[in-house]
Image 1: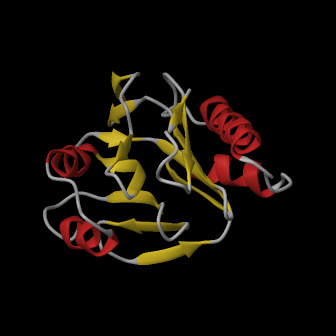
Image 2: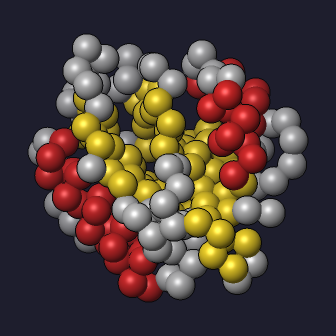
Length: 172
């Protein structure tokens, strides 16, 4: 089974959310890719993934209309998947996965094998006031996970997701 290794999300209430991830995909101890895109934009929902690659690929082919549809699709098939989802219309960040559980996230969260390192970094920081500073925090959290977890690495991507759907996503 292919696995995606670390992703983070930081919500700035009323402004939007920043999601980010490394580009590494591993299987057991082998590195399969270092530049995989682990985030998805489905219009009103923007997500970032860790875990089973097959579910992300299936959902990108047939995007869910809303969070309930995403959770229903995650229940099907095997493999462990963890997903951070930002609902632009509701300005809501949630953590869900293959068992379709749902955890609301007030400010920030991290998932994947390097998630505990990234989360520890984020927990020690002051809340971001805007998307640009949140993007900097996300990048630093990802770098911490890459330094501490051998399964994390590759290209780091950070996406600024404005709450206002008329504004474009900014990918770095």
